[in-house]
Image (cartoon, rainbow, N blue to C red; front, side, top):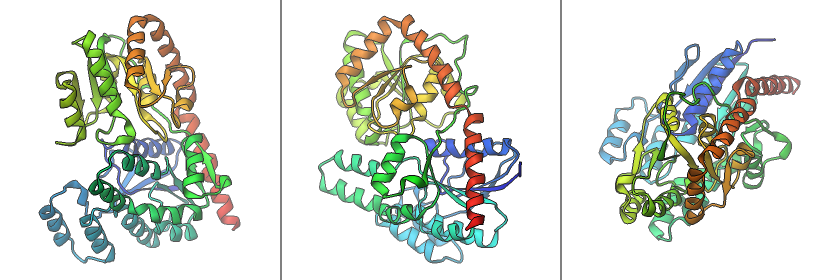
Length: 415
């Protein structure tokens, strides 16, 4: 089979910033193992990539490294030979917007004008104006994990304060661009049937232009550590604190209920709270400061060790395009309790407990039930790992990607 030159575009690829950095690292490595030459073209922060995958840095101003006007102005002033995208990025960020998607798309388009030796371009969810021009010159596949319109709606509903709502409208102003661009993209891959439905409804895309290919997981990286002892007082969750869509509030409120009968119960949160933000205030209000431990910027091996010493994994999200924490916990054989929303039932199957969202009383009740019948739920968790190995292994998923890539290239050449 022909070996391809593949470019993967990623407007930002933070090592510890959630699913995007994980996805870029995994998919680029998986395609390189198939024998293809893979370049990741990324804006800052840059990804941690496997050997054999080339990183091409496409620097913007990286203004979200800081929220200090003084520091941002220094970055802007330091940039030599400033162009329209630099000015746009600085002033839109100053006004409270998120301009990186648009400016990265333009920079990527300009880069590819002079570097046109790629057989296919894969873009990771920028859905930017620049892609329309790229699509004219290259076979292009757009990855949309889920429509960001859902994030916007959940954040708007999280507060009635006018100032907050205005800030959300400014931040998500890029959605106007994405709603214009998405219907014009001819080849979209998304990660779940739930996300496909959302893309059709929210972005007005054609059903036939969207293909579902699940994300994969390295089940060796996420596997139970046999010698580890599970702490029956330890719960674990992964959540971007202060992001309403992740539903962390309900895990914290359930912990408050459980603490009444068991003062030693505690929750590990893989993530970090915003200093002085909503989550920190809620923890103080609930008087559970000594029962919540945040772990940020930790390696996969450290996450694996935390899963291997925890007794129950919680995913209390209100929406997930594709929930990495679901399959990571299941792969580590942790009994799982997750909300029955969006893509989560697709991932869990019959190997976890699904509950209604926004119900801390039901969540605390289910946690008690798991802990009091632990051997039974542990058997289900062991079966759950086998389900993950069978369904979400990268070998299977990369084959699906490869077939799709060759089909997209063939259709482009015909046109």
